[in-house]
Image (cartoon, rainbow, N blue to C red; front, side):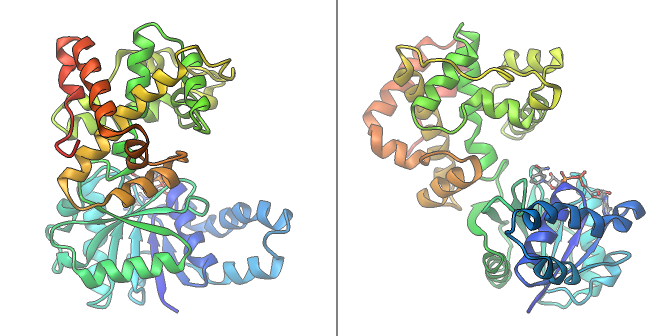
Length: 369
Ligand SMILES: NC(=O)c1ccc[n+]([C@@H]2O[C@H](COP(=O)([O-])OP(=O)(O)OC[C@H]3O[C@@H](n4cnc5c(N)ncnc54)[C@H](O)[C@@H]3O)[C@@H](O)[C@H]2O)c1
């Protein structure tokens, strides 16, 4: 059985460590902070407790899992690992320093992976002795529960490294979807219109309740505002701003004032007790619920088609990623199939016509449409 190393034992790192240890891998783990190292076993035990109490994990299986989880002082003690995944703060220079330290002790064919959400994997590979062994393994929160992992290849990622990372991660029970080293990868990028178009509707005078009710009626488990309230408006704003910057302020990633105002109000969602909608639930869908859902889906289809045109992924990959990453009832290409390209183009043309000048380019159809 292979050994997996995890650097950074915060929210993501501990979940990633649990994922591989649960699948029978030996896990070596570390964190820069002594307290995080010292209480990691206790935190992991706590994370497993609900499963033990629910009878889904026997105490013996829990103990076996914990016995495969070993905390070490630093990256220098991770030379035995076949795959090392960093999940530390989102700062390029911190991640690069970790990979340099790992490269000095790990075997030449061992794989280095980053769990970054927003940094360029290629930029991280620069300066490594062997940049080909670095790739992205982007897990979703909570890592032990979420099935999806985006496998991010930069131009120089070696096929053997990609295959090894995929095999080990699939063996840990994940669905691994290849994606390009582009801002937001698949899910964080293709999700933008779900929120953005809902915020556009809100600014046009529709209510969060109506919009969410329309999406629930179309089969979504949560509407855009329910999802923002769940994750936090501040987190959503940061992700939107980061993508807008990375995509040269293309209006497809426009940061709507309504989102900024929500964050400024301090009503961030569940974590503050009040959000766009929370603690309320969406009411009855409005008479034009189908048109609202079609408008949001048309922009989801368009974003996915733009990403597809840039290469490095597939229609099925994008559909699977959005179903697993966002709990969507169908992926954008299934939406395209259902509505038909002519209808999607007509909706986009209508939106472009009605949009203010600065936002018209938001609705430019992707080449594949
Ligand atoms: N939170 C999410 O939903 C999510 C989802 C996917 C990816 N990510 C990415 O995962 C990474 C970690 O995010 P998080 O939410 O777990 O953060 P976190 O703040 O919960 O944990 C980060 C951990 O890294 C440790 N750390 C910092 N510098 C270190 C160093 N030099 N060496 C070793 N450990 C160090 C910190 O002590 C901390 O325990 C980030 O790159 C983030 O973008 C986060």
